[in-house]
Length: 480
Image 1 (cartoon, rainbow, N blue to C red):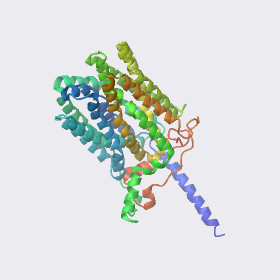
Image 2 (cartoon, rainbow, N blue to C red):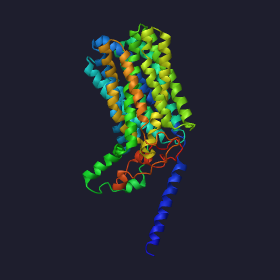
Image 3 (cartoon, rainbow, N blue to C red):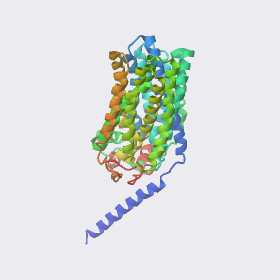
Image 4 (tube, helix red, strand yellow):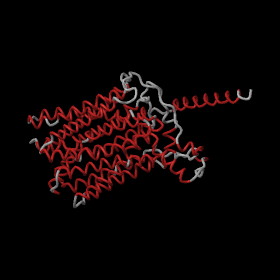
């Protein structure tokens, strides 16, 4: 008799927890203020990746001014990309510990400061430290918090919302390339970088649109001194960074796949303008190729997100398809230099732009399916950190192959090969060949919940009702 009541009580507790999870899902806002944040993400991502993609305009200017090799100049953009990805976990951890609003605004200030200081550079080391390290740190503090905050407001339409938000990257690529070329011709590269630094400060008001959150009562009552201070601090850091994800096979496999495709993904944006100039086309023809690719990039992001949310195919299958196609088109880019056909270069660039845009929306939409929606902030940060090495390797490797061979044939072929290899790695995910989404993983208690150390509002929000664990068949299922 003594064991009956505890069991009944335990069953009631389990039922109450299930009811709370269901209530959380019902209370999840599908939009609302989230649409304002989509607009903020639209602007901020254009000033991060849209600007980063268009830095190829400065490539030729830097080669001529500093009289350095293509490989040495390539380290400028690669350092910025790698720093953005390397510092993304820092941005995620700061958001979990403090406020995403403050973190994004600080990132905007650093991004603008780095570009302004780069306008006064007298050697490549200065550009590595300013455009690379300082601006890269700012970009890292902006991107992951903005994406995670927007995803917190949507469940059923995440892929479409991300596609709309990321479409600004293609739109800005379309607009920035001719604009940057005009700025360089009018004010030289120093004046152009100074203007870009001022333009990047517009990220600050975008971050101000993120609403601050009050600390919950449960977090306020938590005792931060429970247990040894060092152990508690380590557990808190582990929780903020979501380090246990590195012990889970689905997440590690997915991260490896994204890292491989990241080696070749940005190479066309860094070297396509230089390749077009080497093939004999004019400066504005080369800039137009990048703009045209940016236009189809916009279409690819929105169309991919819309089609993915229809639910006809699993997101991971669509991601594999778009990644493989993007790799094939990157490898075909040098065909224009062999044939001397500007039409061929434009057509292949348009195809690559569409596929690269289509895969980008899905890369981030699949993360909640792999790691679980409540851990998406830390999962995005770790993903960016791990793939930062690939971003650092891609452009310099392409520049080295160009220096050795004298053209970009081997550079684009190798870059396309990494994208195809990434798509093949995706096929090794658990239950990849299943046509239906596997069941969602059970909720795992965080390190802070076990130690009684409360999280700041943004962390609680990401772990709570605004990130409900999705059901199978929805856009928030799991891969493994």
